[in-house]
Amino acid sequence: MRVILLKDVPSIGHAGDVREVKDGYARNFLLPRGLAAAATAGNLQHLARAQAAAKQRENRVLREVAELKTRLETLVVEVRARAGEEGRLFGSITAQDIAEAIARKGVEITKKQIELTDPIKTTGFYKVPVRLHQHHTAMVEINVIGAG
Image (cartoon, rainbow, N blue to C red; front, top):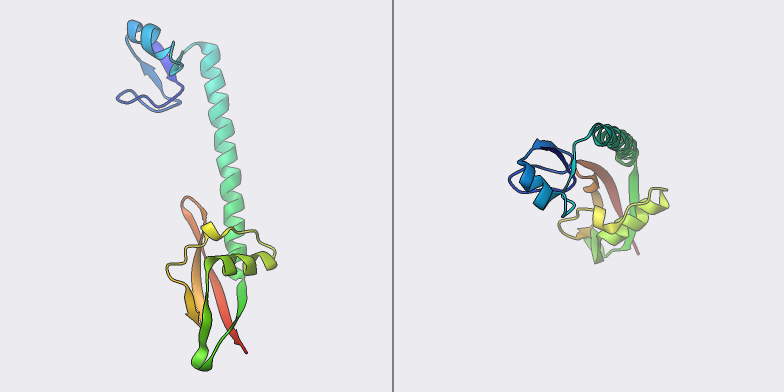
């Protein structure tokens, strides 16, 4: 019996796959548990439409991420902090400080998207990675300016 997997099933396949399984396995296990649906013509058309819509959604998201990446990589974000002699900061610049500075430039980024390995403790220019999507990261230039 041909079935369309609705959820990932170990040793058979992933959600959205069309597989040939034994009739009893489909009738007694997959169908009652909602793991699969019969591969009828209507269900196959519905699957094709759903996959096309998902592809369009993913393409739109990737376009938006690419636009945001180019916008972020052209920015130079200034962060002011109190500093002593030789450019040493009294505190440190954290991911939250960077997120707030980027938000002042008109781009909404959360502190969880900023991949800052260590807090910034001296003045100067830094390149900070910002995760925008699963496979896309923008390098934002941060200028730490000492005040006081």
